[in-house]
Length: 604
Image (cartoon, rainbow, N blue to C red; front, side):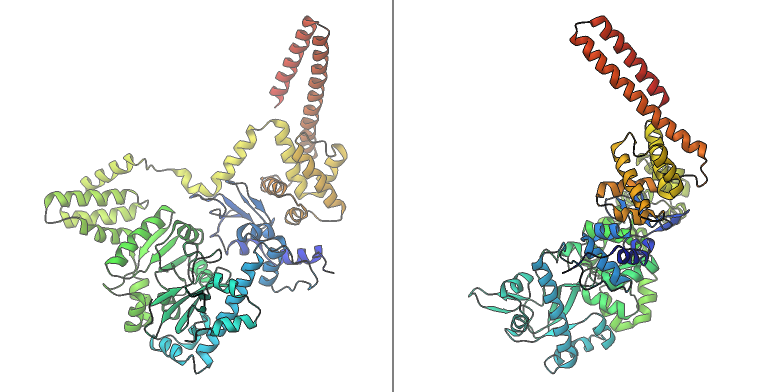
C-alpha cells in the first residue's frame, strides 16, 4: 500500500531548497536590506512588491497577498499538486523520495502525461537516428553543413525523422500508445482517406521544450524539397506558441547570471548563437512577440537585446517587439547586425567572436535604433518634415529616465540640425511636463514602498486588531511568547482567523517543533491561512520586546472583549424594554450603548 510522504522527508526537501535560490530561478530578485524584492510572478505589476525572506524561508507579495514557503511557491508557479512540487524540489536537490508514496495527485491529465512521454520517446528516437544510423546520415550532414557541431547537436537533441510513412506510429504503438493520442499530440497525421502517416517524415527535427526541459513539440525542416519547407507541431494544451520561448530551459541560468537576454526569431539563430557562446539566447515560435512572452522576460531580466533579421520585415518586427518590451519595463537594445543579414548567416560567414563583439556587445540603444527607424516616415530634405521628425524624437526622448542619455541624443539633434541645446532642452521639458513625468524621490525606495504602505494600513486598523496581529507575529518567532499568550489569553482573540492561527500554532509547538515559520506554513492545509501567516511573519517586529509590551497588547484585546460583552448585554436589555413597551427605558439603554461605543472607538 502506498503511504503519505513522512514529515521528516518533506522537511529534508524543504531545507535542501533555499527559497531565494528557487524563487530566483523564476523572478529577478534584488536584495534590499535583509529581504529580496522582485516583480510578482502571480499578478501584473511594474514596481516590485514581491518579497522573499531568506531568514524565514518564506515569500509574500504585498500587492496580491500570495505567500508561503518554497513548496507553496512551486505549487503556485507551476500549478503543481503538493506531491508534484515535492518531487520537483526533491529532484532539484538530489533527494530520492520513497517509492511507496502516494503519487495520484497530478495536476496534469493522464492524456497529457502520455503525450509528454510519447514526445520524450520520439525525441530520443530521432536523435539516435541522426547520430548513429545510416538512415539519419542526410540529416546529420545537413546540420554539419550549417556548421553545427556534435556537442550542440547533443545539447539540443537535434534529430531526423526517416522518410517512411508509418515508422514513428509503429514505434509508438509498440510502446502502447494509441493512434488517437498520437494524432492529437501532432506526432502523426490523419489524412483525408482516414489513413495515418508520420507528420515529420523526411525532415530534420528540433525538439521544442517547455521551461522544465520537457519536449512538447517539434520544429521540423525539409531536406528533400518537401512542402511546406518548415513544419511545426500543432498547437495544443501543452504547446502554445504565444507562451513558449524556445531554449528558455537551457538559457535560464545564463540569463540570470548576465541579467540580459538575447531574443531571436528562429530556432537555428538560437542554436548557432548558443554554439558561438551567446548562451542567454531564446526565440519566439515563428510568430510576433506576445505580451505573455514579454512579461515573462521582464520577470527575469532588466535588458533584452533584440537580434532579428536585418531586412525590412525584421526591422519592422524589431520595432514592434521593442515597443512591447518597453511597455513591460524592459530596457531594450538592438543588435548591430549588418543590413539584410540574419544572425545564423552572420555567424557562418564571419565567425563566433565577431558575432559576440560586433553584433551583440555593440548593440545600439533603442533610441539610436528609433532615430534611424523613424527617418523612413519623413522627407528630411523638406523643412516641415524635419521639424516633425525632431518633434517625434523629442517625444521619445522625454520618456527616457536617464538625464545623461537624454542629453547625449539632444546633442546629436543639435549638431545634426543646428538647433541650440537650450531650445531642445526646453521643448523636451515641456513634453515631460505634458506627460506628467516628474522627479519622484520615492522611486528610489520603490522596493520598500509597499512595506511602508502595509504598515500604514495596519495603523488604520482598530487597536485590538493591531494588538492581535503584533502578538501573533511575535508568537511565530518566539515559543516563550506563545506560551505566555496561551496561558493568559488562550485562543480568545476577537478576529476569527486569528483564533484559528493561534490554535494551530499552540498545537505546532506542543508537538515539539521549534519556531520555524516556513515549517509551520507547511503544517497548514488552508491556503488563506497560509497567506495570513505569511503576511504576519513579514511584519517588522522588535526582537527584544518587553513583558510590559506583551501585557499591553493582551490588555487591549481583553478590553475589546469586555466592552463587546457589555454592549451585547445592553442590546439584550434594550430589546426586552422594547418588548415590554417601555420606550423611555429603551432610549436610556440606547444612550448607554452609544457612550460605550464612543469609548471603544477612542480606545481603538
